[in-house]
Length: 191
Length: 191
DNA sequence: CCTACCGATCGGTAGG
DNA sequence: CCTACCGATCGGTAGG
Image (cartoon, rainbow over all chains, first blue to last red; front, side, top):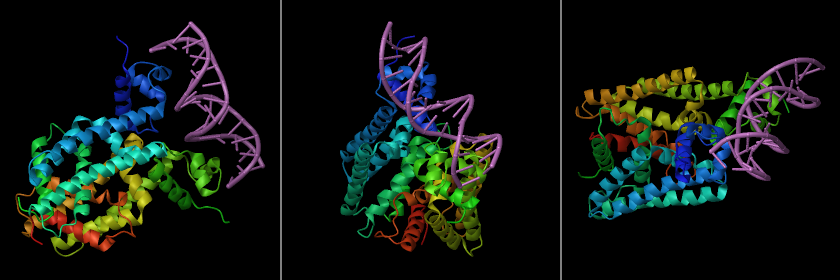
């Protein structure tokens, strides 16, 4: 039994926030999960809100890293494919942080919430850029509403953790491929 | 200043739950919104959980009615169009109930939560039925994974209230049309 | 990380 | 629907 690290506490908070919500989680609940008292958590972090900030910014970071990597790929089609696969990997490999990031932002203090919202907008803009590139390369028609397309795509991607199971019928690689095909075709593109 | 009805209380609860979450809402918060004391709410309902049940089952009912109406339409394409338009109308005309239904189900008592989950599965089955009909009518290919298709479609539909604005660039009728086209094309169908 | 607390707020009730 | 409460739980702190 060694002492817990700050990261352990944050990871535990992420799991609780993702399943029970920020307001549905008490410091004592969290302590129980970690095998310590609720009050002992204050030896590692300043407070409950600080935990939410850490979890959410951790989640945001995963998505940003993934998007930036996707932009490095050659060719718009490859970028779109990488963006989709990257998003699915983040959401499934970091379920707690990703879900908290996607669902609990509203409970951040107003100022921090705005910052995170901007960061999320920027992430969406990466996808818009990629879709624009698809139009420029002639993979997608100029008539495509790229803004709507990015919203549809992210709606699908952000829900994956709600139904996907690693042991299910559909495999993860197939899913990425299928979403890519669905989106590209949906926009009238050529595969 | 006349007395509030039970429905007024439930509507108020829906608004609060949708924006602040079930656990982020206290009976006193709710009373403030309604212009009464938190404790006065107990003259109308048995408790907080009963409010959540009422809001969520109200939301579920709107969706069910909409889906059943869609199934009455002639032709699979028309049914799909009606299902999509109906879902968007429910989510935008009853934002509070719909959002609470979609986001706060986990906070229902276990038994009730299972019932609601079944109801939601049944709603998804309506869409699967419609997509199956599309395959049978030759609008969609037999290779289409109808289960995945229904998930993608509902993912898009369930997120609409998060970004759509009545005063925005895209009109509601255009949106329904656009989602319909996106889905049908995405599945390799013919418009 | 625990002991021993604190004031504030929570869901809810009795009685009118 | 209000007055006047109740015990339980909340986020958080002082001191070790």
